[in-house]
Length: 115
Image 1 (cartoon, one colour):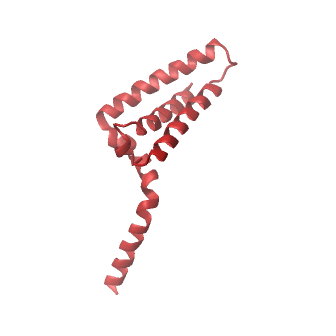
Image 2 (cartoon, helix red, strand yellow):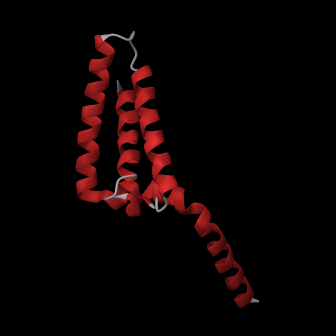
C-alpha cells in the first residue's frame, strides 16, 4: 500500500506540473513536455493499479482508491503551501539540458579571467 501511495503521489505531481496553473513552476514550457508529463502520470497510476498487491477484484480497487485519495490530499495541500518547492526537482530535470551550455560558458569565462 505504501508503494501505491508513493506512485500515486508522484503521478499527481506530474499531472499537476502539466496543468495550466503550475507548468511554469515546473519548467514545462512546451506543449510536448506537458503531454509527456500527463502521459507518464497516467502510466504511474496504471502501474499503481497493477502493483496493488492482490488479484484484480474489489479489494485492489479499494486499495488503489485509498492510496490515490491520500496521495491527492497530500499533493494538493503541498501545492497550496509550497508549489515551487514541490516542483523544483522536476524543474531541474526539465531545464537541465538548456542550462548546461550556459554553465559551461560561465566556467570558461571564469577560467579565462583568472588566466
